Length: 448
Ligand SMILES: [Zn+2]
Ligand SMILES: [Zn+2]
Image (tube, rainbow, N blue to C red; front, side, top):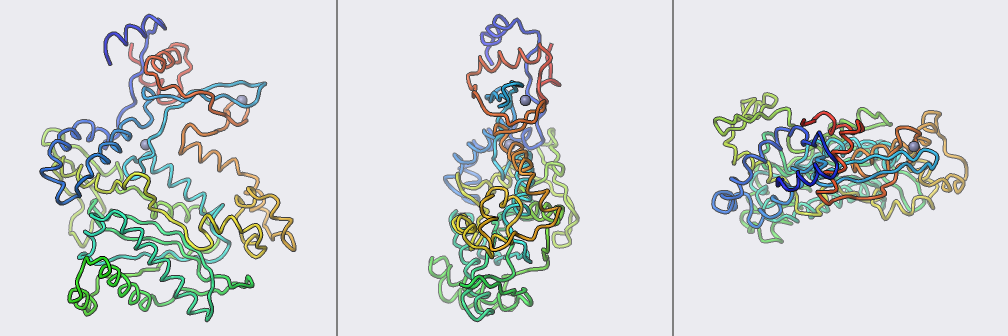
């Protein structure tokens, strides 16, 4: 920030205090100090192993992350929609770089858990499945950044085929799949978690409950289909494919140990955490500034036989940023009844309306009368359906500038202006601090 700008601000608002950005978290501190050095050697040292043409995307994401929640990079002015109140506030922007920013990721996890339990999942049993592929195939996901989508499509098809075969006729189920590229210690370990409805509906709207029993069969078919996908892409040749099919320990796995019944909010949050978790928890990372090393603590891992790992700082940044998806890529996808398009037709299907969550009902008040009888809701569910404000509150947490409730009267806040001009922003911040109206994250960093 140039002296002239500060001087202008001084004059314009006769400021005694100035906004100083909140303390950085450890990842921001590492990136702020060392990203430049990393970027300078990326092509030479990391591009081959971690992917070419990635630096631009990584730089963009890191830049956004370093500005997350920092008022200096723009504020939204929110005004209470209740004319009798007229309360106003300012909010900074959040970065929403989910696979990098711990704060935005955590908010998203909360939101995702709420969405799953209150809005998306039908009131029927589900199972959590995890799909992994052998080491040999993992690097292809790094260098082909759309391959994950084909894998997810394949997994959905696999589930549909299994369920229809078990029902003896075509049935429509639903699942939410989440692709994750990070394993323990940030290493590259592409895998897919899924929340899968245990069964599906036939044309007449009859539900077939098909519990997942032994997953050995499914794993065998998963293995054959993935190998065939890799053959089609010519990533492997026929002899490699044949040898992979003959391995005793195939490296493919389908695990389904977690069952989900009913609406346990805590369980749902744990599950959301598991499916949408960021690659790393900041609490586990320490920067050793003097040695230029990053120490990374984790649970003792019997496979690696260690509970901490030391990285040279640029190696750490390479490991961390390899998990940033290409721009606009969605790693969580919904299929079958849970796909957006199918959900658009739920209100015309009484058998689904009866089983839909309270937040879905709150969004579709007319759907209830369309059913033959009122949905059998417990008192608790009725209360929850009235609480769509919870939903708004969570959205507000994630997208800090979206409508949120007025702290004085409870009415919705609307965005009346977005201020990006640094001079204007500085003026506003100084004014807020000096009039004692600084919002959280702003007041505690006075610089006199
Ligand atoms: Zn963020
Ligand atoms: Zn108000």
